[in-house]
Length: 77
Image (cartoon, rainbow, N blue to C red):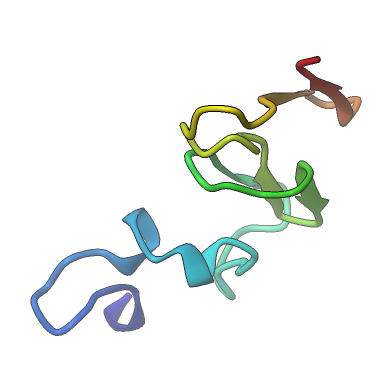
């Protein structure tokens, strides 16, 4: 989709952290967008969206994982 790209033709959804909670409007109902490498205070679970890498690859932050389809969150100590 045209709105997925910046003015240089790079796909925004690959690096724009502001798009983390966004669910593409044309995402089929039975699909889920899963992301990581984005620092979050907790795993983010919503209809059509899952962000599970709470550390964002940064030292000193807790790492989270989500068991799917139960949506059970596991976080490192």
